Image: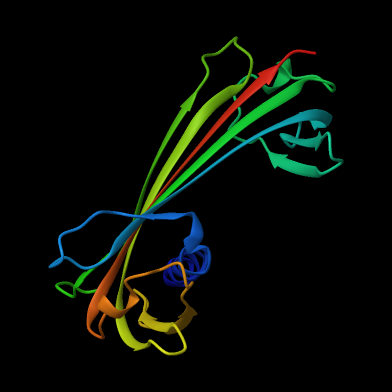
Length: 192
């Protein structure tokens, strides 16, 4: 579990600090530490190319020729899906990042909700997952725009901070970075 938390922290922080251009800084009083919200939305439509009903997997292919094998072990009514059916996928990710004075031990936690279509209907549903990670700032180099964070597993990692992050000088050693990531995936199968 600790390795997973460290991996999630590394991925989230890499995306957050390197792609700061998509971030919108939250308006804060001058006495508050910086914070930002990043929202990413994507839609994708693919065609079912193969289905393995026994192992509950499907191969999807989009109009650009990209193929992906999907684990459908939790799918309800998979037997209604046929080769040639379309699958519409909508994905939203919101990442809220805030900096505050360290007032607790770094932690990582998550919550997940799954809503599937009723029995007898075409497969589909919505999966929502929220992860919160707290990490302490161990070091910061303003000239090189790098920040070293100690994650919940006790390991330290250094990240490059994008130039789009304007209030970096307000982040200090000893502060705590709090990251809340919410992801939602909606899937709908449409008959050919």
